[in-house]
Every structure is written in C-alpha cells, then in structure tokens.
Image (tube, rainbow, N blue to C red; front, side, top):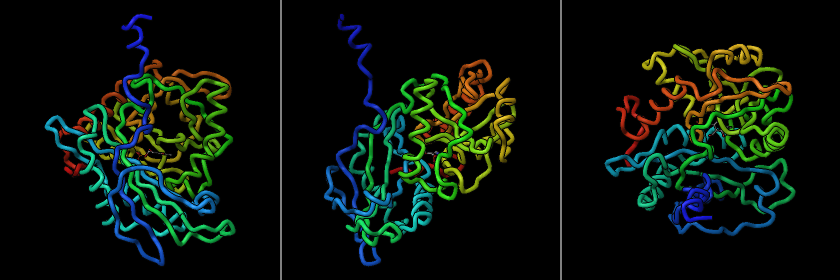
Length: 341
Ligand SMILES: Cc1ncc(COP(=O)(O)O)c(C=O)c1O
C-alpha cells in the first residue's frame, strides 16, 4: 500500500468520546451535603466493588458542547438547560440533585483549564457531567445511595456518525421498548443498556445505524437522539411526555423553526403516519452528538422504505445549517443560548 492509500485509510480523528481532556472536576456527596469541588488530572478513580452504582445503576449524566469560534473564543451551548435536565434525571432516580451553581462552576472550571484542547469547527468540546452512587452496600436494591460522586469530564469530538452527512438507515421497532416508560425523561445508563439488545439485533439483521422505538405503534425516539419529521413549512415531532428524553437540540430546533418558515406540530403520531410522511417528506435525528442527521431509509416489517429521495433532505440541511451557524457564532444568537467561557 502506498503512503497516499495509507493516509486515506487512517481515520482523521479518534471516534466520538474515546479521548478525554487532561482535566476533570470532582465533588462528593455525603451526610446530606455536597463537598466543595476540585479540578484534577483526569484519570482512574477509586471505587468499592460493592459501590451502589455497580449493582443498582444509581447514575445519571449529561452531554453537551462548547464550541471554538473563528475569533478563538470558546462558547458553551445551553448549559443551564443541561444542568436542569441533570437535576431532573437525579430526581427521577431518587438521587440527590447536584447544586446547579456548583455544577456550573465545575463545568466552567474544566472548560477554562482545557481551552487549548477544544478542536476547531466542525469539532467541539463535549462535556459530560456524571453522578453515581458510591455507597458500598450490595444489599441496597431499594435504598438510594447516601454517598455519591459527581464528575465533569470533557472530550474533544468530531463526527458522531462516522459517515458524517451520509443518510442514515433506521429500523422501526414496534415491539421492544427503549426503557421503562416513567424513566424516559432521565438520562441514565440503564436506558442505554435496555436499548442495546434491540439495537444490536437490528444492526446484525438489517445493517441499520439506529433503532427508532415505536412501542405500541407510536413513534418515540431512537437510542440516542430525538426524531423529527420535516417538510416544506412543517416540522412534526412527538409531544413531551415521560417516555423519552427531552432533547435540548430538539427544543432549540423547534424554537428556531418559525423564523425559518416552519410551523411546529408536537403530538403523538403513529408508524402508519410516519410511513405516509416519508413518501415525499423528510425524517431526521436530533441530538447534541447527531446535531440533525437525515434519515435515508427505514426498515419496517422486513421491508426497506426510502425516505423522500433517499438522501439527506434539503430542509434537514437547512435546519442543521441554521443551528450549527448559531452554535459556531456565525449567525446571531437571538435566544441567549451561548455563554462565552
Ligand atoms: C435517548 C436520547 N434522546 C435524545 C437525545 C438528544 O438530547 P440532546 O438534544 O439534549 O442532546 C439524547 C442525547 O443526546 C439521547 O441520549
């Protein structure tokens, strides 16, 4: 193989989330209160083999990004919403809520320390607060942990879906659920564990990228992103309820939509409606990692169904560009979503 071919084979960047920056923030919870936090070298932590989280999955986390703008500044996107969702996840899991002010300081502290490790656009710094139960007790299935650790990790990231803007192939799953219906709003490890089996099975059988969970024939979301139907002048997506994660990207796109010429319809809709829509409409996944990723093909009942013309749709591209433009500081942030760090 010549040098040129070797260069072409080598991935340009490490896979999403596989590398951490050198700094993390740490706080602990004990005797009903949070300790002060510290910034440390990111590395292994000591944990009891009996730690609550290892047995009873007492954990929740967040994921969001800070962007390096062309002027060299670093700007974090909707941090307050992500902190609020972290607190909501903790409540749903009967864990002590992180203090919003302290968590914000931890996040800003990490970003400040690692600002030279924030990749240029289209890369970003992915921020990952995570809370977990440390109480050493293997007999506490129905007792929340009294000792917890809160970390803020950071990771330089590039593309989540390795194909970039390649249209996605999605399996429409009408039997299995992504998670327990009351915990859909929580960003908790157990939900991803529950989605793993159906996702791997669909990947193996149909070669899909992701699974769209539609228990009982109602469209919900995929394993790690919300689901939007898009066409000229309209966006439709499931209305908020406890069964799925209330994405900040979803919320941002819906808030931007009217000024871009789209009416938003939030309601429960069925797989039959989905199949009718994609005959000449678009479908896309929204999330911090996916941004807005177009769907090209659905697999339903063993059949492949083309979405629109099978490529990433023009409205999906337009909405994605508008959101990315705001995040990158190229389009004015009229909503006050970005905070310079
Ligand atoms: C299950 C699930 N749904 C939706 C989303 C999208 O949420 P957000 O737009 O806040 O990143 C995520 C996370 O990215 C997720 O894990």
